[in-house]
Image (cartoon, rainbow, N blue to C red; front, side):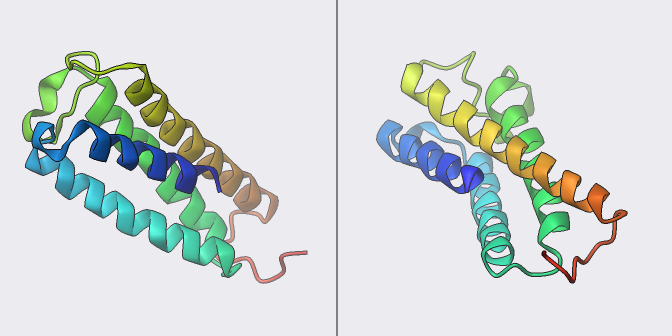
Length: 127
């Protein structure tokens, strides 16, 4: 699943860079994101009826959240780990953009499944 791979790559990069360069608000936000990715992974793998809705909300929510934290200038204070303002290398950019693109893909697929099923929150028949 794209978002899980991107999430792992992005967080491995945080470990590589060291947590001393990451603000507390970013760590809290990343922990919340980890919990949401775990829920998303669980409902998708188990083919739970709410998986498309969860994919749409979590996927697109991660796009907004990760983009705000990492792609905007440091306007968000403790919630910011701005790559444009930071001293980061290409691997960090690749890791963050991979997570954003994976989350966008999952979110869009979730929306497509919802649309195909007349925006029903729960999908009973996966075939």
